[in-house]
Length: 172
Image (cartoon, rainbow, N blue to C red; front, side, top):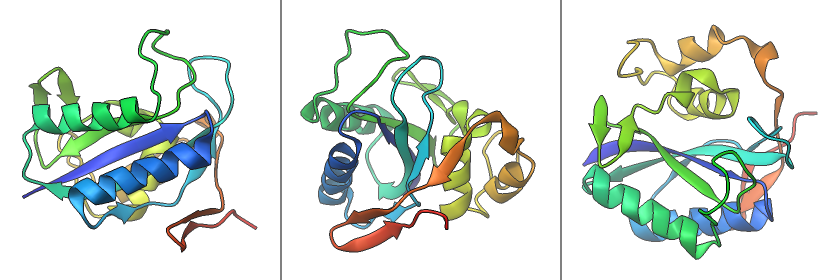
């Protein structure tokens, strides 16, 4: 089994699509490690705020098969692929890390470069896998987050409940 971390994001009917994605991931992978859910401003375009989180799963699927499965979950949630790269979306699921794999496979570049660039990925990753080491930098995600310039991106935790479980709470 390979330890995989995924980023989830939505800025259209956000709570419904994130919950549906978690349902689909749990059905497919079983137990999920789920970060807090964060709200952030759209990056790269003018749009509604996103909900973002990171989910950890274990899988024996190769990268290509995993990528196809995640695209199917996006499509099942009304993902439109005909618009611009940076645009509003019902659901976006990206593979952040696949074990310690570094490189490109099936069109997926790993580890995903936004891991060290975007707070909406790095903060939740540091929350659920603080001692996990970034496969390229050799630094833990806790250290990467501690050294991140927090002024670069507005991000805040929100109240989120899934299957009766409180996943996160808004900051007081």
